Length: 331
Image (cartoon, rainbow, N blue to C red; front, side, top):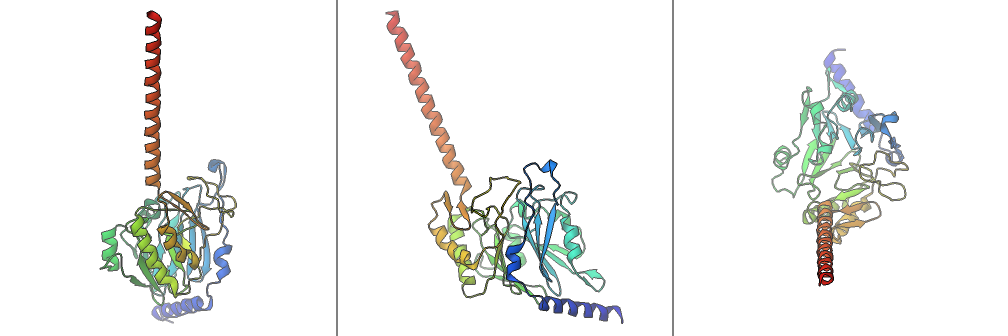
C-alpha cells in the first residue's frame, strides 16, 4: 500500500466516521466545565478543556483561572482543511497551550497535518490574542480581524449584507456579517451540524451594544437566515449566567452552578425585538442581558459631576452662612 493510497483511504475513513457519528443534541447541553475558583493561586485548574461533540467537531474552553473571560473556541474539521473559530484571550503558550492542543486534534493527510484556518467572530482582543501561537506554524492561515482585512478575505462586497462560503471539504460553513457589538463581527453557520456559532453577538450573559442601529439590523438579518433552517444549538463566546439566570460579577474567576452553554433558535428570533425595545442602558431577558457600558459610564460620570456640583454648592452656601454669622457677631 503506497503512501498516497493510504492517505486517501484515511481520508475516506475519517469522512465515514464523521457521517456515522452525528451530533447528539443532548451532548451540547450536557457538557460540564471547570467552575474556576475564588483563589486561583491556591487551586489547581486546567488551563484548557476540550469536549468532543462528534468525530469532527470540538469545543475548547479556556480556564477561568487563566483569564476570567473563559472564552469558548470551536474547531470544525472537514476533509480538506479545518476551521478554528476564535483563538481566545491568552497569547502565552506556557499559560494556555492552545495551538499545541488544536494541532494535536487535526488528522493527517499525506504525512502532514490538515491545513488550518484561524478565523474570528470579531476583533476584540479576548477573541484573537491566541493568534500569536499559530502565526509561525506551517499550514496555518489567520483571517484578519479588522473590517477591511476580513471583507477582503471573505469577499464581502456589500457589507454588511450577503454572506460568504467556507468549504472545508464536504463541510460548508457560511459566514454572516453581524456588526453591532463590534464593527467586524460575524457569525458562522455550520452546514454539517446546523449549529450557529455567535461569538459575542448572542450568548448567555452580557451582550454589550456598541452600535444599537447596526446591532438591530444585524439581528434581523440573522433571524431571517435561521427562520427556515433547523438550528439545533446556538453557541456563543462566553457563559456569564448561573442556572438561576443571575449574572456573575464582572471579572469573576469562579462560576459555581453555571448554566449550560447552548442557546436556542428561539433566542435568535427574539433578539431583534429585544434590541428594538432596548432602553439604551440595561435590559434583562430570559437567557441574556443587553447592556451599553459606554452609555452607562457616561450616565455615571454625569451623575458624579452633578453630585460634585451639588456638594460644591452646599459647601459654598455653608461658608457664606458662617461668614454672615461671624459678621453679625462682630457687630
